[in-house]
Each structure stands twice: as structure tokens, then as C-alpha cells.
Amino acid sequence: MSILNLKEDDRLLPQLKKPNPRLEYKIYRKWRGKFRATLIKKYHCPEEMVEEVYSEAFTITIQNIQTGKLDLPLQANLLTYCISVGKNILSNSRPKKHTPIPMDEDVLTTLLEKMGSEGEDPDFEDAEVEMLVMKIQALLEQMGQNCQDSLKGKYWYNYSHRDMMEEFNLPNENASRQRLHKCLAKMRKKLIGS
Amino acid sequence: MEDYNDKDMDTNYNDIAGIESYLDGTLKGEAQIQFQKWRTSDPESERKIAAQRLIRYGMQAVASKTYQAKVEEWEEQIKQEEAQRQEEDEEAQSVFGRFRTLMPLAIAATVLLLLLIGSRWYISQQYSNQALALANYQVVEADRLKGLRGANPEVPESNWEDCASAVPILQSIVASSPVYAQSQFALGQCLFEQQHYTAAAQAFETSINAGGKSFEQYETAYWSRVLALLASGEQSDKEILQLLDGLPPDTNQGLIRKSDRLKKDLSSVWRAIAR
Image (cartoon, rainbow over all chains, first blue to last red; front, side):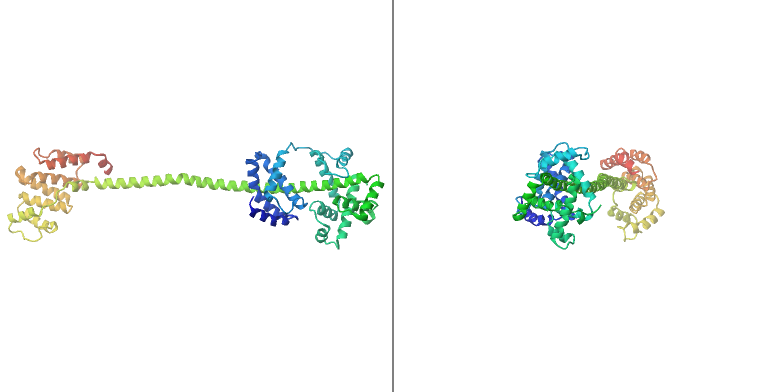
């Protein structure tokens, strides 16, 4: 790993902490060739899989930056990190084609039980994640724009209440907090009825 | 679609805030005590916490899916650009490839054509009637013309080395003494030199007839006549070859060799090309 790259990535990482589609696209293009070559040559990734693995690895890398899971000081450059994510995806790869089915009460109960009230996030089955994604997406679409902004700000982009106050022109952080709590309450009520 | 209004607020509001702080790991002091009280008193608390965790997890999964869908769009876009670029490259490559393949052939063909034209020109220069005649012709010897003057005291002294000046004088001499072989021979040589080949051939023939075989220059005059006829182009190669065969058998070896070489040249493929 070159020290120059590490220094460059030290400057890049803070810029990627907030959504910046133009920069992300630029980085996506920049890493693409090296990622593909490494996965294919070094980790024997089948060519037909490499695009899917790259898009997933890139998504995880960016989300880990935005959620603070990947932060300074960097131990390796960002591309190396992305490649190692890709390598993990490759080693855990299994057939992914599922036909999502609407979530019924039994599934929801299973998910709630698996999730529990404390501890690490459980390893859901791919089909369970698919169903949960469909359900949350549907609930999100039922929300007003303010709620969607608030929930996405908090859980997609890892915004602080100060960030959201500035982003959404709210009078203070408390207003942002109250709006988020109201929206969460509404979503939870739609999900479990209480 | 509507936002959560104040009127919708119920008792869950506080537990929402408490659970959020708990899940963020920021719960402390009095808030933590309140949260623990609520957790033990509300029979739904564990389910509510699990639901809120599930929402967090689900929101992040949706974010991943949404982001990945966007990334896949980028991938598609890049692939399209690459395919287009590859198509353009292939097109350029095929034009360039065709050009690259044909170019050496075109150069080779041009060089070959130039070589053929050059060779044809060179052969025509080397094997033309005039070229063959001149290659075998002997230059006029000035002394001989001077000797001629000795036999004709009326001939003026000047300009004997210059055929252009000599021709009118020689013509006046042969007009008054047509049977004088030497004068006819000298005239033939000068006319040959001035490229009046038909007239030269006639003068050589007259000199042969006038001098007969006893004429000192008989062989040379005969040879010169054949060359003059060849240069004039009025005789076919076959006729020239027949004339060459008519050289006297006792002709000097030098002329015999020249005659053989000329016969060979006239029968060669180069001569056929030059014709």
C-alpha cells in the first residue's frame, strides 16, 4: 500500500461521509478496473459475478464510511478495503435469487424474535432480508416527505440532528429530534400496531 | 401520505425517544432510570425495542438496496460506454486494419509497376534499333578523311574533322565522281554520324558497289550499311539477320564477333520486349 494513496484517502474519506453522488460515481469508476482485475486474477472471481460483487462491495464500503464503521485513521487504503469486502462477499457467496413474498404476521414475529431487544444484529436469511426491505420500503412510501427525509437522514446517511437541522431548515436540533421521533412512532405503529 | 401530527402523538412518544437513546448508546442519568422503569412496567417494551431495532436494520437494508441499485445503474452506464467505445475502436481498427493490410500491397504494386515501367524503358533504350546500331558502330577516323583530301586536291583544307561541314563537300565530290568508293564511304560515315541513316545506308551501298570486294573498306562498309539500315528502322529484324549472314566469310574476327553479338541481341527476349 502506498503512503501517497493512504494520504489521498485520508482526504477522501471525510468527503464521502455525506452523500455526494458525483464524487461516489467518480470513485466507482476509478476503482472499477483494479477491483475487477484483483478479484478475477487474485481471488478467481468468475467474470460474470464480478460486477455484482463490485456493486455490493462498493455499496458496503460507502455505507460503512457514512455510518462511521470505517473511519480515520485508515489502516489500508479505501480501495484495498473495498477489495477485501468483495473478497468476503465472494467467499460467502451463495445463490441469491429469491422471489420475495409479502411479509405476513408469522414472519414479522420471527424477525422480531430473532432481532430481540439487545445484542448484535442477527444473521437473517436472504429471503427474510428481502421481505423486510419490501415492508420497510412500503412503509416509507406511506410517509410524508418530511418523515422520509428525517428517517433517511438518520438511518441512510447517519446525519446528526445538527446536520438535519441545517439540511432541512429546521429551527433547532430539538425540532429535528421531535420530528424523527414522531415519524419513528408512526412507522412502528404501522409495523407492529403499537 | 401525511406526517405524524401532534394529535397522533400518544404515550409511545416518550418510549420512542428513550429507545432511540438506548439504541444510540447515549442513555444516561435520570433518562436511563426512566427508561429502565418503562422497560419493566410495559409488557410490550421488548417487542417495541425489537421493532425499533428492526426498523433501523430495515432502513439500512433499504438504503443498501437503493444505493446498490444506483451503483448498478452506474455499472450499466459504464458498460454501455465501454461497449460503444469498443464498437468505435473496432470500427476504427477495421478501417485502419484494412488500410494497414492494403497499404503494403499498394506500395508493393506501385514499386513493381514503377520497376516494370523503368525496366521496359531501360530495355527499349538498350535494344532499340538505333541503340543496337550505335553500340556496334565505329566512329569516323579523321585521318581517313584527311587522306581523302590528298586524293582530291580541290577539296578545301578546313573542317575535315567536322562531319556537318564535311557532308556538303563530300556530296559535291561524289556528285562529280560517283564511283569513288572512298568518298562514298566517308559520306556514309558522316551521314550516319548525323543520324541520316537511310542516306547513310545508300552511301555505304554505293561505296560497296563502286569499290567491290577489292575495296579496302569493303567489310566495314558492308557492316556499316547493315547498321544504318537497322538504325533507319526500314528493315525487319529478319532482313537484318539475313544481311548479317551475308557478311563475307573472310571478314575479320572483330566484325564476326560483333555480328554474332548483334544477331544474339536481335533474337533475344529483350529485343522482343523493346519492340
